[in-house]
Length: 88
Image (cartoon, rainbow, N blue to C red; front, side, top):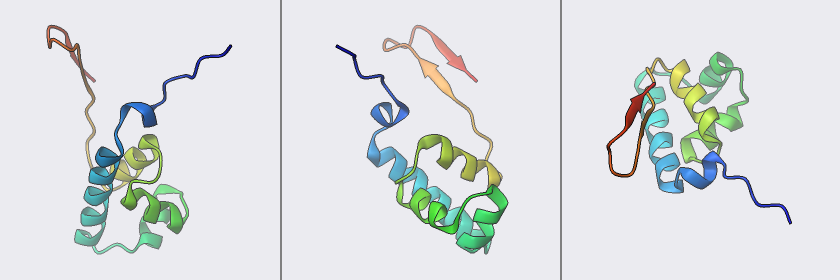
């Protein structure tokens, strides 16, 4: 019997993806970009930007959109007891 692999979707709750989507939406509007403008900049379809703003795409796709908007991304990994912390 095969066990299910853990994916980013399993680790990152929907509420977090929605919060990231709100950041994308607000920054896109702040910069005066249409979804089509941003999609072209990222190399995605306009519908993908809409879904990214709604939190309905994968985290890697949302991160690509954030990067195209000029965000610097940092990943922090910490053990449950915070004894080990790695920042990438």
